[in-house]
Length: 166
Image 1 (cartoon, one colour):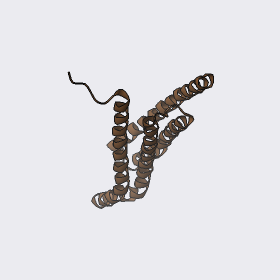
Image 2 (tube, helix red, strand yellow; image 1 turned 135 degrees about the horizontal axis):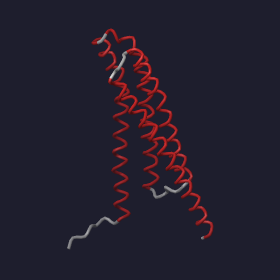
Image 3 (spheres, one colour; image 1 turned 90 degrees about the vertical axis):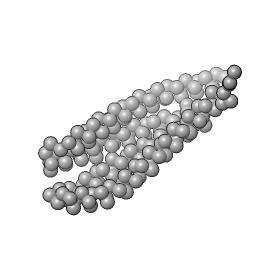
Image 4 (tube, one colour; image 1 turned 30 degrees about the vertical axis):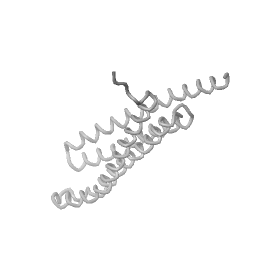
């Protein structure tokens, strides 16, 4: 009978490392999109000269939203590193979760401004459907991470009580 040579702890560590690689790839993709958005906007402005005046504000707002996404992924990487090191139930983890939540809430603002600006200049743009969908997703992620932060805060308090009694 074949048995796995990797025990449960090693498998969890391997999964965490795989997730960290995925998060790292996500960061690289978002950084590429931030760098490429300016170049893409030049071509778009040439193809649609009637929308060329929107190029600067739209690129700025898109880069702000992508920067928020990048910051969330970087903090997520740090959170996964704490899990990999088996120090997840600590006050620093709660701080990371809250930071992710606040950045998610902060990403709503540039997306909202982008939606309003686009609607004012291009009525009934299909792009706004995606922008408002991302805005709703950012808001839901913010709430989810605030909930996780509250749960982890309770777990940290419980762990500290247990450590004191032992």
